[in-house]
Structure formats: structure tokens, C-alpha cells
Image (cartoon, rainbow, N blue to C red):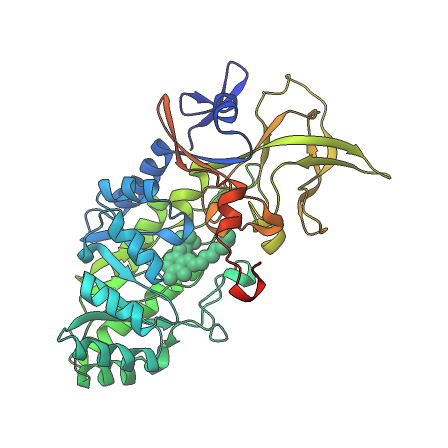
Length: 423
Ligand code: LLP
């Protein structure tokens, strides 16, 4: 459930008509619902109760400071994968003990930053990284809690670009090597292995791959404990999928995921962490765009929008489906016609969808892409010198711009001309 509904014939975000936001900030823009973000966080939090747990929001999905501030105020932890994300977490008020550092290639500078600023744990992804962290921690006179991300060689049955749990993927260490790696950690100064981490992919719509992976983690917990390691925390990653296409069967709910966690690892006495991103932010956001032209082509028609692939790259990059709704509610029984929905960028890849059946929409009309709150704004760029679009947060009847659209001048002034080209 989200908080984007038609009321009096106009699509609203909570109590605010989208047309009102469009008039105030211009199109295109992203809009997020505080109530939906809050609800999604709470669904996970409740699903894991009464286990000792922490929901660590994966900020890569949507790292706007206002969204982070909201998550921090709810008591969430946060999963970061770069120095930039770590800085965002601190700026939003997350204490170090609620920040988890994931990612395949942490640099020395990133390690130093987190060790100095405080960190709940590092999730290690390779042996060279583990040795590097040991060296840095030792130099700074710290002992840092770590988990090792194990790669269980499980097929997550999702899009190949976002599957991470097969042995051919770059992530984690092979689970069969775990004993060896944990015994090396025990011998390394500056590191304390406190748990195990696993994350097999994103947009999973079937619970079986999670079940397979978590059972392997449970077995590994017993093995490592028998080897003398004090395994007391399990980070089970993120990845639960969301319904992109309302007409399809919905993926499993957080409550079902919670039952699975309890069934597979609930009796180990470990503190449980999860790192959801998409499920918290995805359906809490829309991308709103204006139709610039309706073009009649040779055998097919095009809805040309003022939003493009640089604003929402998921369709171009993953062939992703996003529901498209007219902001003005179509008349009951309005006829649907197939149309290609495209942006103005100069490549054919700038196509949001082909032959989508939509009610008639005229130039000047507004459309909203659903499920755009995760991996939308964060993956956008200024390709074609199209300014990053504003982000707006709604709270009941209030809305606020939480990232403003830069002016052309601001964009141009970010570049500098070398002395030899001046004058
Ligand atoms: N933890 C780790 C270590 C991750 O790599 C990810 C996502 C998450 C948690 C959060 O997963 P989620 O709950 O959001 O599925 N750009 C792609 C998605 C990339 C996901 C990368 N890792 C997309 O637009 O579909």
C-alpha cells in the first residue's frame, strides 16, 4: 500500500495534489511520501520482532538527507557503501553504532573515515580487504567488529545485473572458504569477527533463494562456533522485491520474510540485521513529468515527456517496468491506446516503455511513474546537460523541496577552465 491515490479526480501524494507541486516546482520532479516510507520501515521492524534486530536502511536506494533524517528518527540503522554515504549517514544524525559499512572495494580513506567516526561493523568482502582493514585499524589503535560476506552460490532468480549470490559474481567470499577466512581473522590484530553477512541480490520475488541462503548461514554459524568463533550477529542483507506492475501477482510481504528469518535463523540467539532499500523507498516515490508533445509516427505514436533516461535510468538499464498514471484521473471507461513513452534525449535507449496501453493524454498533461522512489534520483545524471530534477517530500498536507533543481549557471560553474585556455 502507498499514499498516492486519486482524490476528486487528481492524483495526490498524501493530502497534496500533484498538480499543486508541479505548479510550485516545475516538472519533472520526484515526490516521496513520508507516511509510506515510515510504514515500510515499520513493516520490517515489526516483521522481525520479537527477535533482537536492527533494520539498516540501504541508503543506496534513496540517499536524500531528508529521507535519511526520517529513517534515523524512526530508530533505523543504515547500510552504507562508500565514504560519501558514510558522510551522509553522519550528517543525518545516525550514530556510528547504527552504521554498517558494506561494499566490495572499501578504500583505506573510507576505512579511516569510519574507524574515526564510529562504526557498527564492516562487512568484509575479500581477503585482501580484510588484511587492509586489519592494518588500518591497528595503525589507529582500534579493534573493529567485522562480519564476512559469504557467497552461497544461490540463484536469486532476479535480473542478472542485480543478482549477487552466485559464485561468478564479484561479491563476498565463497562459503566453502569461510572457516579458513574466519581463522585468519582471529589471528589478525585490529579485527573482531562477530558475525556473518549475506546478500544475494535485489528485487527478489520468491522467498526460496533467501531460505536456501539463510539455511547455509545457520549451518555456518554452528560450524564457526564449534571452531571457537563468537558468532552473535547475522546480517541477512536486503533484496525483497516490490510490485512494479500492479496487474501482476505481488511479491512476498515483509511479514512473510520475517517468518522465514525466524524459521531459518531465529533459534541461533543471534542479533539479526537486514538491509532493505527498495522495499522501503521504491513505492514511496513517484517521478512526475509533463507531456511535451504527442507525436504521430509511422504506425506508432509517441508520448514525448520532459523526463528522460538521465532522470530515471531503470527502463533503459534493466528493461524495468514502471506503471505510468495520468495525474488527472481518466474518465471511467476511457479507451486505452498503445503508445511509446519516451524522453527527449538523443538516443533510442531513451524509451521508458513501448506500446503501453494508456488513456488519451494531451500535450501539457502530467504523468506519474510509480515505484520510482528507489534507484531513481540516486541513479540520475546530467547527461545532455539536463539539470538534476528536484526532489520533494510530502508530509500529510505539507510539502517541501528536499533537493532543488540547479540553475544552468550552477552546472556550468562546476567546470573550470585551465589557465592555458583562458583569455
Ligand atoms: N545490501 C547490499 C549489500 C546491497 O548491495 C543492496 C543492493 C542492498 C542491501 C539493498 O537491496 P534492496 O533491498 O534495495 O533490493 N540499481 C538497481 C538495484 C541495485 C541493488 C544493489 N544492491 C535497480 O535499480 O534495480
